[in-house]
Length: 193
Image (cartoon, rainbow, N blue to C red; front, side, top):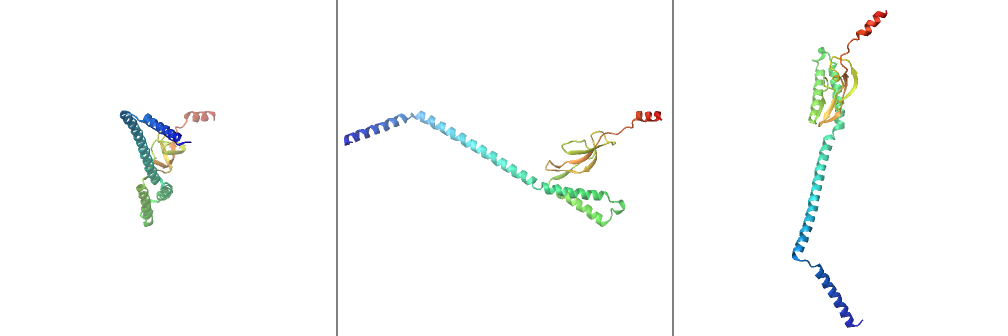
């Protein structure tokens, strides 16, 4: 290619670049509008990312708090079993032995275990005489009693809660109401004789 042709080709390329630049140039109002749109888009992305991060932070804190609360759950359940055994043993003590130092020591240990559990937000579910609620109680039997029907007549195993969550439901016997003697069957059997 000769020098004239090269300069002519270069001139054409330069003029094409100028035309492209001219086409791309916007009026100041259009440029401002374009920049405002871009700023709004970036602001929206920023706010969404901040909201996502804040949600993540809250979830993480909540999960950590829940984990800490429930970390002692298994140990607390085992201590509850020990506490139940102390309670059962102390119920078997006769009046004449209640003043014995060894028995008093057992009573103090039982109270100390109860206090340790209370500090960890573990509390006993008071069930005796309450209305049966499957959320808190596990019915193992229905027995006739003086209690109204669907009332807990006996506690077989204590239930416990930790931080307002059931650690172990109370295992109970539910009253089926007082059993009235069937006078019709008695009369029939005496008449047949």
